[in-house]
Image 1: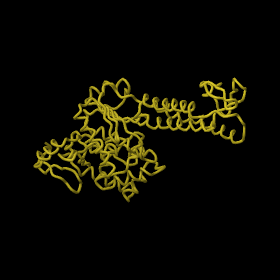
Image 2 (image 1 turned 180 degrees about the vertical axis):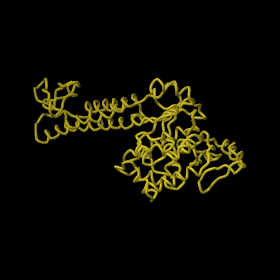
Image 3 (image 1 turned 30 degrees about the horizontal axis):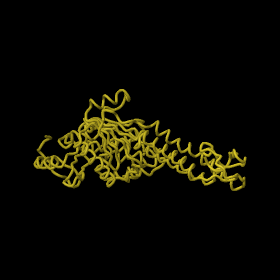
Image 4 (image 1 turned 90 degrees about the horizontal axis):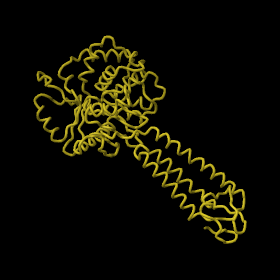
Amino acid sequence: MYRCPHCGEQALSAWRKLFLGQVGPAACRSCGGRVVASAWGLALLLPLVAASALASFCFESLGPFGAGVLVGGAILAALALHLEAVPLVAHRPSRTVRLAALVGLSALLAVPAAGLPLGLAAARYLPPPASLPAERRTGHFEIHTDLGPAELDHHARFLEGFVECFQARYFPVRQRRRLRVFLFADAAGYEAWVRPRYATCSPYGFYLRRSNVVVANLGSGLGTVTHELVHHFVAVSFAEPPPKWINEGFAAFFEKFIAGLDADGRLELSLGYFHDRRFPEVKRNVERLKLAELAAAPDPDQSTARSLALFLHRRGRLADLVNRARVARGAGDGLGLLEAACGKPTAEVEREWKDFLRAQPVDADVLLVEQSACMQREEWAAWQEANRERLYWDPELGIYRVRPGAGAE
């Protein structure tokens, strides 16, 4: 029981005190005096708002249980403080008290408003598959996988190294929370979980922006993972969604690479290789290619878009294009961005792009990277030694190339 500020008798129960405020006073059962809780109790609403907002912001990392514990703990703490720390005072209506009551009611309304994003986040939350029991959290990722501990450690190093390399070459990733990555070791595990839920999805992998999740079949190689990661980087870092041909071409550009970890565990990554499957397809259709059609297509051909991204990379214009797209608003079909990045009209860029495609034969350089992977330190050193006679490093292009006459193997 709590003492009445009028008569000093213990006449108010804890239950009644919890519901006392500036608007709804209670009468003391002993003397009949009207009693309210001090206006300072209104400050207890602020931690509730903060807890709701924090739970919403970090929901993908906390999960529903963690978010519930955070908000529930804040509510219990506020109730306990209200009972023990907020004094009872005599009800004396005044302008100050009425203003405090108005502020309190506004804060009270803000609690469910802050909880609304939490509810939306709960609706978007995608629980990790039960078939992916291993979990690892890094600076940028929350990884769920069925890989063993050593492989998980290796892939975690690769993912963090990839972010570092990407930011050094293109733009900073404005990621507010860890990206959740579901890595399936093979196609069987991927298909078993994906098909019942996403019947028309890619057999390689996909990015769910609303759920902040990348899902990938590692059986198709790491190029799938990097493709989807770049979609995520674009989604969280661009002022507006870019034209689709830029988005898809830029992401597909990262499908082919050669990478390994050095003696210090840092990622050595070389980009700018042809796609062994996509490039021959584009080359066969080179005479029919038109930039205006690519830019206007609601679902642009990824192989064509990638070939343009590779051409721009070889000309040193790809980073300029994507950074222009990153800050642009109302870019339309994106051809104006392309012209600004290249310093040439679209027709001239198209002619040079098609000349680039015509001049490149489907040779050992095109077929060099069949499946992108990141080699562990010992494997990386052994690969470099084994390919000393077959490959050479092209410092101008920043890639490995096949020595003339060495062949594709």
